[in-house]
Length: 438
Ligand SMILES: NC(=O)c1ccc[n+]([C@@H]2O[C@H](COP(=O)([O-])OP(=O)(O)OC[C@H]3O[C@@H](n4cnc5c(N)ncnc54)[C@H](O)[C@@H]3O)[C@@H](O)[C@H]2O)c1
Image 1 (cartoon, protein in one colour):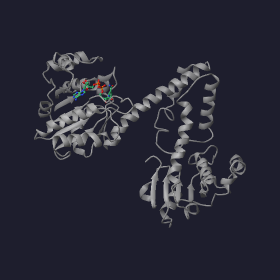
Image 2 (image 1 turned 90 degrees about the horizontal axis):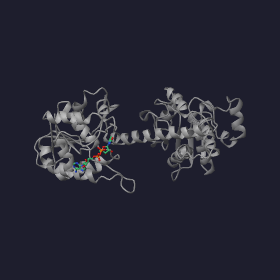
Image 3 (image 1 turned 90 degrees about the vertical axis):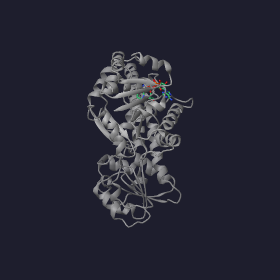
Image 4 (image 1 turned 135 degrees about the vertical axis):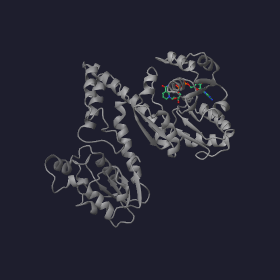
């Protein structure tokens, strides 16, 4: 393929060299004449393992040219990767000046081009950037319509400095966010030889996915370091602790607990987080991240309540009360907090949880309801149907067949559903639906 690469920094220079190595004809474009001169003379503008030799080899092959002439680069190629920088603005937002400028230039060049062209944004950008800035800038500058006259899509880049050629050849997956399959298919042609899954998705998902990955990496490093400080203060080997943490591939290094949903609770997580933070306090440590986890969890409960406490609502039904499906344990259940907040604000509440059926409850949980939350025990009804019959809002935290049947067959025309669990939308009847994170 004939490909142009805009921005010859870490991402662009590695992409240019690897694309040319893989037999594509590549035109590199940058505003920095020094970088263009270096590549012209067979040298790399960045320091990376293996890049000097590779750059020399691909420039000598004749498959690489560089220019600051955008019109020529667009005219001579069929697909462009845009890898210009998106640094932080002083307020923490993203500085999109380089993206805007390069899209104006590419759009101007597209105006003079009669054949189809595909523009692939690889710079990391906030969700919505492609639709609010990139597409309109290209359309305005070219006077053409995207999808019809040219295509534009987003492909997050996963390479890391220091191992970038290896990462280019072994990405965890290749994701293309596009409005239709045509643009994505063209990008896939370039990367189909890679040993990884190729996935099509929406542009917004592809844009945010890259931010989610980088935030996750930062959170993991900070987590290991905060545990490390606690371990050191307690005279325990931090590296051994984290090694064992990582050996649990079922609950720790796994998709477990990584699905957006409702707040955590129960008899262990809040209690043990409090104890860990207390241990840090008595050892004169600060743990800014672990110290804010319970606060973040409370913010999530507030987020659910904001969806329920809308003007006009007085009667609420709760399907589910324990901290997770399949248990009758109510200790520190975030749903008990939801119920208590609603009762405190004067809402009329009816609650059903098949696992917390008062007549069947035994032992500690019966005592907990009777002694600690008798005000909630009094609001429990005998089945799901009774909880939602007269409600204006149903807060649903379990998706058992009985709950789904009740939500499909009720005859309450005003019922709004606040879904905390990911219900199958097509199987529930409601006047208004609101998901906790979707
Ligand atoms: N560095 C990484 O490891 C990495 C990994 C994945 C994603 N990213 C993302 O990729 C993007 C690029 O990162 P980078 O580290 O390669 O940036 P960089 O700062 O090293 O390079 C950007 C290049 O773009 C050039 N440029 C600016 N305006 C231009 C224009 N109008 N036309 C042509 N070239 C222009 C600059 O001169 C510079 O050479 C960023 O959005 C970054 O977040 C970076």
